Image (tube, rainbow, N blue to C red; front, side, top):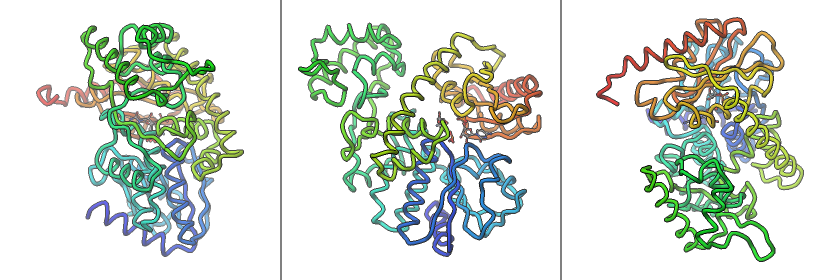
Length: 465
Ligand code: C5P
Ligand code: C5P
């Protein structure tokens, strides 16, 4: 049975339903997944309502309606099947559309999970889109949202572009006319909205000596190249507005700078996805900026605003989303600075810190991901934070990179085992995972994670890496 078979089985459950409830995650992938699937289902004339939860944990189960609807869990559910079972949900009333590692349980819940078929570089929005397209080929306008979800969940990061089925979805977007591909463009966040020196100065992948982490140095570097950086009336140009020649001039200067400091140049360029139906110089124009806009809504408890934007609301929802985005950016910068200033405690195989009540638990994972390259990138970084509405619980976010994964690290496995051992619950991916644990078990938990990471690395044959 391939992914296509699972998709067809899942769709037959949807077609047979009198009513559907979509229960989705609050991040960019969760919001775009919900928007794809709920719109596709509504287009079939099936009544559909949506619920967003920040994580599928016992407290969140109260948002799952106890009614006759088919409950479609999206971008979550695979790793929490025993929770569904504990809440008395039967196999007939559940469909899971996900890309997380599945947790086996007695009840055989129906799943459409790309991970079951070996696709590790596709997010839930990609799976949802494949379902929408199978439901009606006319749904290819929704491929654009799948590109946002995939890019938002970092599926393009390691490969500097989407690959496999996620890349095929890009072609559907191109055919639909709302996705544009820039094949070898600058691999840098903010190319549609930020002044070019800000774009370069905020980026550290690849790390370019004398430019990364220093916007004034980046500006001086660009000024020397004599490229036009402002319009006639004094507005900063964004990268997307430059001519092909100007881009080439900058890229070749950046390449030389990398070579001069003995660094690889392969990550300087990547595939970039733009949306020609969106206004220029807005975050909606570019897949990675669009994804940040959705994250800003969802992670600050307003996923429905993001869902409105995905459905084309360019009035009130978009205005609110823009406000959320500027707030999100400011706090993320503060969070990153806090982590760097406070420093981390290093164990043999792990580095960790605690942000207490200073930042909402929904964003600390983003800070962990950003801090990793600025700290000891060889050791996974774990951040604990207080959960605002539950003093007994600590939220954990942990991040690593492909380098560590090649050496045996599996954060999903570590979070699941260590949290279970202290009476919590966790999961995610090899590269990015999280957990909820009892507050009084923090120290024991961290030591367990460190031990598991040590075992994982020891199990890996050094010749394999
Ligand atoms: O739901 P979960 O898939 O929702 O987590 C997504 C988060 O995990 C992203 O925001 C990203 O920070 C991180 N992630 C990553 N690399 C991956 C997959 C996820 O950094 N390959
Ligand atoms: O919250 P955070 O961004 O750190 O989550 C990273 C990944 O870990 C996500 O894919 C999320 O779904 C997963 N996770 C989980 N169980 C938790 C917390 C996070 O499976 N209790």
